[in-house]
Image (cartoon, rainbow, N blue to C red; front, side, top):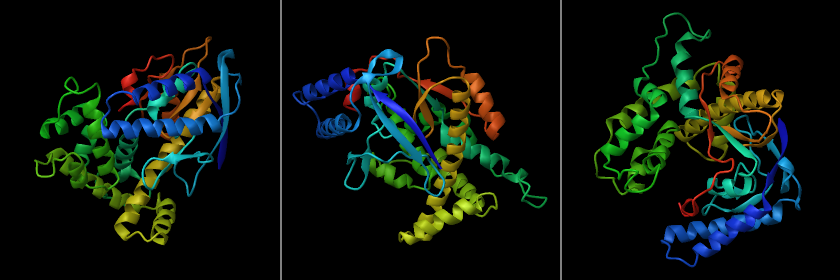
Length: 344
């Protein structure tokens, strides 16, 4: 399955963000900040080469187009990987498109016309609802008990409070002491790591807190997700996806537990993709021009004659997929990004 969309960047925004990054190189930066700025400049050099010439684009403004083809491999997410960029690290390449673009660059390059519509707390919301309904599936004999997912339900219904509990347990600085969103930025990777079978210890080592106290909430969450993964991978509903992914993981030399983690992630990504395509369908039917698919969201073109009805979008997705999700708009359209956002 493939989908094609044309996205656009602002040529003036490209020049502006390149200028800001070059100016940042002349200031006092930490080693981490310096490497990040250098990566962004290499990425933007690839952007400049990859996007087309300036023409009349969205809202009649000068813009540079890129035709993006999104496709799946063994189900899962819709990826656009036609245009390879610089490496994020020693192993992984970046990709030149809105989907693969570092978040800090999108306001400069797409903010004149783009609205960024996102599924809030996406994978947690999806997998909690799958687990909460597991005992009702028609494939079961009578007597299957509901899974105990009390901690996962807390993460699903009150993620910000859950993050504060973790941050307090590990005595992280407050947002006021660091920067807005610091605690979420620090703890969210831990939650995603736990959701997909990763190690709490690895996160603690990254934060230089290996010998500190563990959060009982994270420990319980690990246990609940392990049980959820076990029953989903043995279910008939996801047998095809899980079987294909396990086999692919094993061919790459990954052991059983790693293969199971990969299969569980593929199930979540397949469900995410179904929801994304449902969102896309409603938006197109409602007259919106979709520019980019961004895994758990998308970028649509601003309309002077309409306001995006997120409640109607949510209801359509619920009717279409049975998932009750919260859609929200992330800051993008005509925002004024702080220069500091390029250093994070």
